[in-house]
Image (cartoon, rainbow, N blue to C red):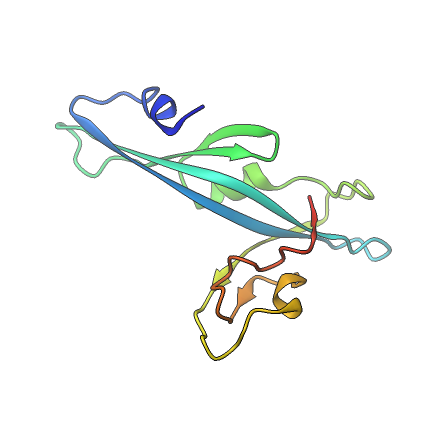
Length: 137
């Protein structure tokens, strides 16, 4: 589905703003024998209807990727939708980590960033390559 097709599903009296964003999260299995880490990529489509009778209305987030599409109203619903059990061992004890990038042009992006399992990135890629060499979740 295109962002315009998704935006058409939401009621609006006047107009709406549509914005897309490519995102990713890292997931780490906390089961001691497994400890698998992976990267999950998804597209977030933000649809904000501008209703004449309700200023500042809710932004709907449509998630595409990871073999599913769903709708969420906030970041916490997004996390619940993206969370999945470990594909290697089936454990439900999985830690979902959002990547927070901080620009640091003095630090080149390298293998340490591309293999990272954590959520913080402080290099020149600003989180775009963080965990990129991990297997897909």
